[in-house]
Structure formats: C-alpha cells, structure tokens
Length: 458
Ligand code: F0G
Image 1 (cartoon, rainbow, N blue to C red):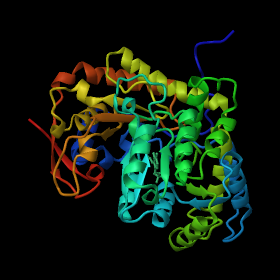
Image 2: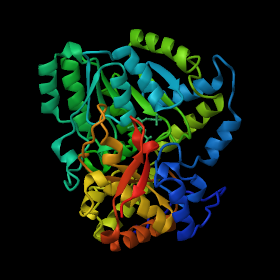
Image 3: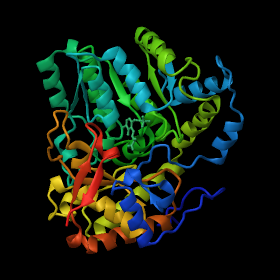
C-alpha cells in the first residue's frame, strides 16, 4: 500500500516560537519598514519565505557534529571530514572552503575574469553576475527559450541553449571565454532543473573548445532528484550517483553551502586545475582564511560534512520536492498564476498576471509582497522591476517578469504552515483588484531592493 500523504521525514526536536501578530500590528510594522519587507524585524514575521539560504533547520546529527568541531588553525580534523564529504559527491582535486557562495565566486572570477572576457551561464545568480562584472568581464544568460516563459511546462526549463552557446563562442572567440557556468537548479529562472543530457552537452561543447566548465551547484540535490523523476532511464538511480555524474562532466564548481548542504553558513570552490587552485588559495588567504578552514569555524565544517550526506537522502528529497509542489499546485488550482512546473526550492507567483492593473513601474510584485505580509505575516521577495529595474546609468526599465518568490527553508515549516500560506494567498488574490501600486521615495544607486523606501500610491 502506498499512501498519498508524504509526511515530513523527521520529528521536531527543538522548537522556535512564532509570534502571532494582528493585521494592525503588521500595518504598523510595514509603515515603520517603509514598505520594504527586507526592513521588517524577523520577529514580526510569522512565516518567513524570504529565502531558502541558511534558513533551514539543522538535524540532531549536525548539532552533535558541532560539538565535535576542532578549531585548530591549520590541518584540523574537521577540515578533513568536510573535504571527504565534499569529495564523496564532487570528487574534484582541490576543495577550497569559503564563508558563503559569493566568496567562492569572488575568488574564482578574480582569477579567471577581467575586461574583455565573457562568461555564459543558463542564468547567473545576482551575486555571480555582480562578481563577474566587478572584474570588468561580461555575464551572459543563455537559458532555453522555454526557461523564460512562466507557462511552458518543459521538464528541464533550466537547460542551457546549446545553439546559443555555440553561437556565442563563434562570435566572441573561445580565448575570451575563461569558463562556462551552469546553475543547478536555475534559481533566477524559477528553481528549474537542468537535465543530465544538457549538463553533458554543455560539457562537450566547452571541452571541444578548450574552455573549462563549472557548476554553480547550490541546489545539486534538488536538481538530481528532478533528473531521477523526469529524465528517461534515471528512475532507478541513487541521487548521490546522479550528483557524481553531474560533477564528472565539470572541471570545478562554486557553491553556497547555505542551500542543499544544509548549512546556516558556508560555501566552497572546488576544481581540478592545479595552477588556478594555487592562485585561488592565495586569494583565499588574503580574504577568507587559511586553506583548511577558509571562512568557516571547525564546527561549521563538521555540520556541513553531515549536512552534505543528509542532502542526498531520498526520503528527504521526496518530501522536499513534493512539499514545494504542494504549495505551488494549490495556488495554481486556486487560479493564482504561478511559474510552472513548480521548482525545487520556491514557488514564484506571477504578480504581473495577478495584478494587471498595476503597471511594472508601480511595482506589482512589491504590492503583492506587502499584501501577503499585511494579510498573514508572510514574507516573500519581489523579483521584478524593483530588483532589476534600476540600471547603472540611473535609468529605470521594466523587468522581464514581475514575480514574488516564496522560498521554502529546508525542514523548517510543516504542512499546516503551508496550508496557512495557501489560505493567505487566496485571501489576497480575492481582493487583488483593490491592491495599489507603490512609488519609491528613497533608493541607493545599486541593489536597491534591499534598502529602498516605498510609499503606497493613492
Ligand atoms: N548561486 C546561486 C544559484 C544562489 O542562489 C546564491 C544565493 C548564490 C550563488 C550566492 O550564495 O548567498 O551563499 O553568497 N542565493 C540566495 C537566494 C541568497 O535567496 O536565492 P551566497
């Protein structure tokens, strides 16, 4: 007998209280935060879906491992455990620990980037692109066309467009492309997976042109689970084997260990090239720390060594992917427009479709994010014109999509929390016509979404 209900494959061992707030309290909090959900006090948020990064629950075994942490400056046994755990899935010759993903990116692109260089990906995450551009290089997103269409039901909407990649190499020259990246799953494109066939194809193109190929592997386990579920011939495989196969096509990786590796902090750069690794380690010592701890304490390395093993558990991944889909499918069934198929770590509501009366430059995503907080204390994140609209020359442009991301922290919320989120979203959708746009009253010149101040339009 198989049952329909997929239970959380854990019991709760220690709890964090959620303070229940009233609509009036939340209205006050919004005013005090100038309607920017990043400025809310987390204690005033009931269900925090701002990010899945570093916000997951560690397991009993991870907390136990923390006690085992060895804080030796050099050559700590915690480092050896960490390196072995990383290499059990990603057997690259060099493993370079960092305090989070962007530190690994900063180091990699400091070595490989520079003016005149072009670095393609399916879609670069914001910090990846920013670190590429900071060196004077250019980041290019080459996801397949289905990956830009919120309604396309392609099973691997994170795939790279191989023809576009070949065309870019022909146009710019392999010598100007120091690395090809592939983000698994494709966070900025809706948490959509990349197929094993596509990883192999990107690798083949890269290596035919003598270009190194790196994964941005933050959500490797979720991606591998989708491969197991959706790709022909993969159904009987172990997820750890699929991850190892993905890694086998690459020459290296960057990762934020705050995602699938179940850390509250951490990241790493791993690669095979000895000369690049040497340069990267020199930069690591300059900015992060000694190569056997990088930016982390011994206890963090221990927690990650355990988290990496837990990340590829089939019981966990079945629950993880199913529970995200549960939220997304319920919203879809209620007539709330969401990006489909539902991704691994988040549900993306299409605010442009839900609030067609609010033009992009009055920020429909912001309006929806504010309404979700006001209605039910839920914090999501606008991914639209607020986040991407302000260009370096000071002009404002509409973003391609106006989304609100509800990212699900790992092992943190139960089904009743998610049922509540569904109810709140439905309540907001019912009064969608009455939601108003916003205007920005104060903003910095870059990355404005974090600190901008807003005012509701009359
Ligand atoms: N790459 C991807 C695909 C990411 O999603 C992130 C972070 C990073 C790199 C950077 O890692 O935060 O540890 O420095 N994404 C978070 C998010 C912040 O909310 O999606 P980091």
